[in-house]
Image 1 (cartoon, rainbow, N blue to C red):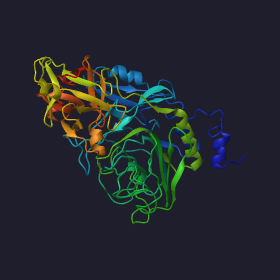
Image 2: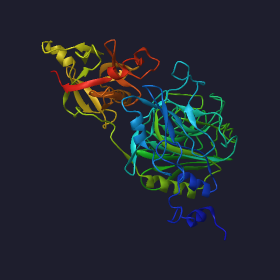
Image 3: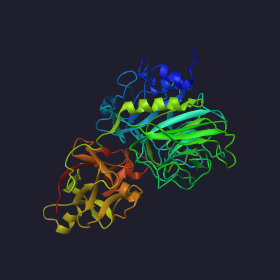
Image 4: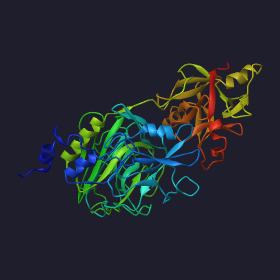
Length: 502
């Protein structure tokens, strides 16, 4: 009996119900004749029999690492194992393992045409707790990419090169984006440099309009083909829609003088085709000159100003059929992605007034306060002036950049909020910008030293509100800044939450 590719998928129970109904995304691609050459996810297995390591985390207390695997073969990541390993300290995602068996793992991206933010030029690593989710009720963690964060593999086995065909998909947070370059996942240069038009083929997500755009104000799914973000044959004014889905399925595929852009809600419904046709008209894109590296969170030349959240993604050999991708979308929907709490601990209620007292030995009489625009720690007692008590009192508001977290409004300067700028805490008036709202949003957790709460920056979840030399910062545990010093870090970022002092 002869089957077309689509009828063959149905016959084997991948579109219809049947013996392979539990097949994972890469099982579906293999049955469709376009197997995965890389499969990356920190949330679940992407093959129904996969039980190996999904990712590795490194904790700040002692530098130890551990691998996180699925709870069961083909299942959801064991977030509980991460939580136990990382208890009372910070953790970073150091490796995102390739489930395909080819060893195409993603690790800390090295410097390139655009240097990385670390002292050695390497990119930052993502917080292990920045993007909690649930899959059918089971907790897992995605990869929260802040500007400066990136992963890469320049020696990939089996990836498309030149004009060879390939496909890729990624599940992203459709609400986490910016206009920086470039939040990508896909095929890129092997030398970390911009080597010309057509040397990349990657999923881009964001609202940049410099190289391309879709309809409305964005964000958009676009294809990063190097020196151009495309939603059609021409760089701009194409019909790709602005995206509003919290969880979004993004698909790019390309072959000899053909490519397509598809997307859809990752929790319900089917895929839409935003573009399918010939390669872009500017020179250099037909034929393509793909090089075969894999990037996550950065551009091909290590451009590091983009932001976004990645949950899972794959790259294939060959040009996947729409039927195969439709089956993968059904599997993604069945995975049951959903949001979960971004905060823990107690003492933060919207509308309440709070004070934040330091817990570091020798500084326990100090509270987080401000002098003008400068956030600092100051000694406050019952006999202190009422003006100082007001400067050390904060009104809790729903997070300006994410209502699942909080913002802290100055009691004595209504309309002004704690925000970080260049990782230094300031009290500034809300200017209504997206950047301000995100920089003024914080997510409390149980105190890292066992006392009170530790308060991480929503947009930079490796960084926590810290007092250092009596000045307020958002510090990371052992980073390159002076105020990132590991000594007394857990104490310096833990605050006893009390009633407002004024």
